[in-house]
Image (cartoon, rainbow, N blue to C red; front, side, top):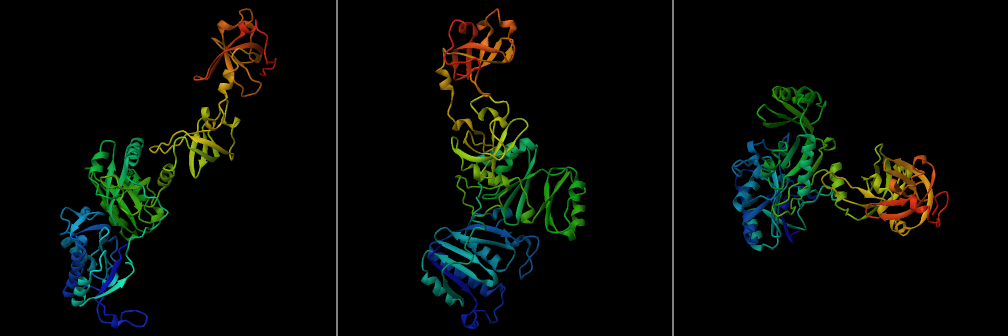
Length: 504
């Protein structure tokens, strides 16, 4: 916030009543003449004394569907001569020389439909308010400029701050940058859906639309206006009649259509212009409808373009989607982090889903336990609170695999200490190359393989699942989680610490 802020108006304080309301004869519109020129000269005086010769456009906006100003709307919103390459030059962060900045102020004083903050960071600001109220901020007291302003017939008044200083709409919203993670997710989304739509908002109420395929994402990216707000939408419907049939009964909406040459057009309409909109897209090959009501706009995810150095300097925010909220949460996670969550679902294919702070993570069967299990329900149940370790954070697919066993003691080193022991346990499976025997007296006990070469030839053909078999633990491969057993060697060794029921 700058230390010296002045409200500059054409309204004489002597013409205000006891409530501070202006009761004089000055109109609330620009005279397009000497008073308007006086405003611009005052700004120039403050800028010169502040040492500023160019200004940055901040949070630009142009008139929307309706015009609410006191003066008639103007084609091009008063910007046509200032940005000859097109309206996309009127974007956040665009630097303009002081002369162009003054013309922007003129357009705002005339309420031509464009508005923005004009700033030189840390040094100078110009804000145009309603009814010809002007707010000038400076890092310097600007005594000469104040005297010049008074000599021009204007009335400066010192304030603590401009009422038009930027303030975020929702401080709790996390602004998502269009960084490498964003573009990787966009590539993945386009690959998964074959095509999506990118909305590029370069100024409030001013957007361009791009239909993306895997082949043109980077070409579109290179043409985006700096600091644009981006929203990714599902693809248009090739059934144009179905798209038009989805029009709501009332309210503002934007209709998009793609013509036979691949050009994208859009039109903002309300219920009074449905018929005109329908005639516009009769020959379109694809169309869609996007509501302009905030609570009805549901893009897949959003972002704001950072500057070329990767720093996000744009201050405006996008309404966060569920994907954006997931992204913000995922940014707080790290591989190896221990989290607590609640089991919400056990899928039929065996994956366990866990709610961790509103985000659904997953645990694959091998990560549920060090011990062999048949189904996740052997270890966890829906509604159970568990503690697990984050194995990875996939920002592209927005997936977080967890491990329950990672926070449990690994029993395999203890099993390795049992090499040489002879135990008796049940046969659990018969395979062409041998049999498996459980060596612990528990349903999830570890099992080892008795290879056919380690079976007693005389009893090999008579072994069945469920039979108790005395075996010797001859090898434990911790890396591959394998236990080798021998029935033949066990016959020559007295069981140690084992029992006929397989306890060890």
